[in-house]
Length: 401
Figure (tube, rainbow, N blue to C red):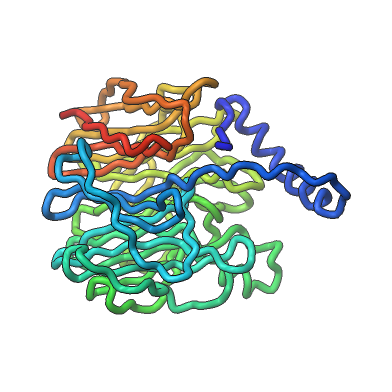
């Protein structure tokens, strides 16, 4: 069974009820119930995608047997080679929504695949990686990326190579919450990261990027003009506002990161709804996120300055039901995509701009009544593509050809 987000006007009510639902669930564990019929488990459709330097499109995902696979297309998704199963030992793999396998290509034949491995305790995990030095023809056994090996939260990783070929891994981490004298006073989790200067063969120390992140939202990464990477994530600003934060990797951590969104959404729950970030042609960044502002819940688009601070007023996407939006750019070309459920089918929609976000056109790309994943965006040179996986397969759409 697929869990759908409510229309925007109901989302706030739904999130407010989460605490009560969790409490009810806890009480229900101690009650006597008649045996229930087993529910069908929703398929794990979340995937990672990227174009290889050769021009092939690669997708990493779990198949119906929960095996880790890679699949390639030499014609931009029109046809696909047979999936190739990768050895991952006994690792379980998260492949649902905000937590998915990912793939990145380095400058010298390196390919890395990452995923979160759930551990024995609830909401705990380890960031695992497979590495190739021959363009993906063979991969290493999986290994843990971070130095900290406690059975705690290390989840929702993002990976990317910068312009110098350094591999960056970022993740949500709860080691500081575990060490806090008063856990109830520690807001959320933290964002940690590390670097590998040899394509994943070795990693530097775990570096704290920021304390008090949200617990279950993806981390967005984008190239900066000087060849570094910029990061954006949902943050818990005091006293309990779940807006978004921005940081340039490599800079000294600040006492509080730059506040990139100004929704001031106070909610005691994680929305499971991370942001998107991409460079703007005129400088700074384009960003999308989901939040509630003045009682109105919506997915929004906004511009950020070079330091991540907001520029101008953010605007809602032109779809009240828009969820899990993401964006990508190539020069002045910008594409924002999202999915939207209308009660009968999930629709894949796009807001497209050729003038660096000054004007947009709305397009409907696809629709499906089946279980489906969040849309993914990839770039090949100046061309942009949206990928959408349903139980029927992977749909690939060229954007602004």
